Length: 122
Picture: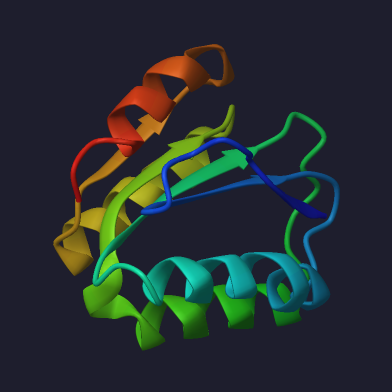
């Protein structure tokens, strides 16, 4: 499931992923929020929090995540990933390196620090 993080600036889309994340989650929550932010800004920052009960992505969700990333490749500002998983943190940093975008990873207890960084200027 994906839920939006409230009270962020309009150039930031913040989401919390919990349980199993599906393509329906992307289509009904993340993509509309991303498109709304992109209608107001050329570049958007993303705060992605994986809750402790995160149980992975369905194949459809992975496709939607990849497709949205590629479709809006030049629209990404900063990306902050908050989770416990060393694998996801490593993959996130590698993605940032390959795509030449600023990516920072944080532990769950560092959420406030992640919010401060992600809310900065795009």
